[in-house]
Length: 124
Image (cartoon, rainbow, N blue to C red; front, top):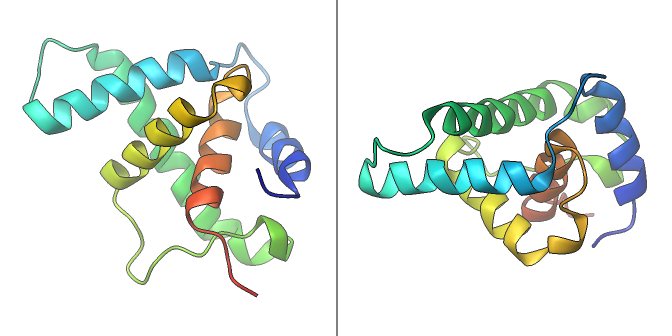
């Protein structure tokens, strides 16, 4: 993973709620259910979990779009022109979590920020 992950974890961790935080294992399961719904309109999935996944992804995308310019350069994200859809964000997150099982103990919001920053780093 990129340098600066520790700082990103601290930043997003500070912004995350202080209560019981969902971890990456739960987030992966919820977001996989959301992908199955997007692909198959599978209404028998965990609708509550899908909503949590969507809310986490949408919240992190929105937060980074609002605060991006105020972050240190190494923590900024550079989305493509026009941004990304929540569905894209969910698919990126699922792929990232599957490829990085060693960090599934991190908070869901932190993992989402790391996954999106990994997918959309700023050049230069």
